[in-house]
Amino acid sequence: MTTAARHKVASAATAGPGPTGEVEPGPQGAADGPPESARERVNRRWAEILQETRVAQTGVQVLFGFLLSIAFTSRFDELTTFDRALYVVTVVLGASSTAALIAPVAIHRCLSGLRMKDEVVEAAGRMMVCGMALLALTIACTLLLILDVVLPRPLAQVLVASVMGWFALCWYVLPLRLRRRAARRAP
Image (tube, rainbow, N blue to C red):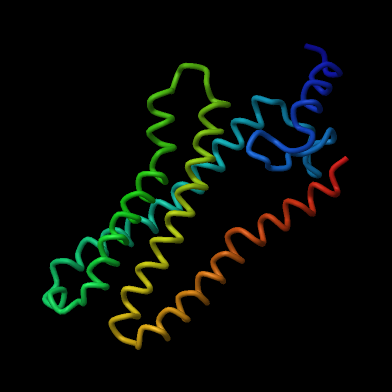
């Protein structure tokens, strides 16, 4: 393929929103280099997902391990019915977020060698978003469980709502705002 043809393919493949809605580099590519090919883009996106997965998996696994150990403490019998129900919901959310955040590894392993990297990256990206939402819910429930034991319930609920508002700003509002800003600048 000639350089001009490769540039045309790369420009068409990378301009505007990508399959997951992310804004990809335009025809000129990244500001610091030549345009990336479709193959380079999918390889870059896969490497980014792997790095994000490593970070998220560590956090969710530590939190889930902590949650599993609570039931075996001496004070567990002192929990109210509400706190026990909240504990069950929290553990289920923790297990679900663990599954979603480890899913990219399983997806890759099951589909490796089948020349489906685009589909693997797309599915892995969606599982990461799902896992992060479940992780936020797990953190909210964990925080409520802990604060409900040490503070009056209304105060615990206000604090959890405040912290989850901060999570929403950091994890969703800010990235979506940046995405919209980048989309407005894209040709």
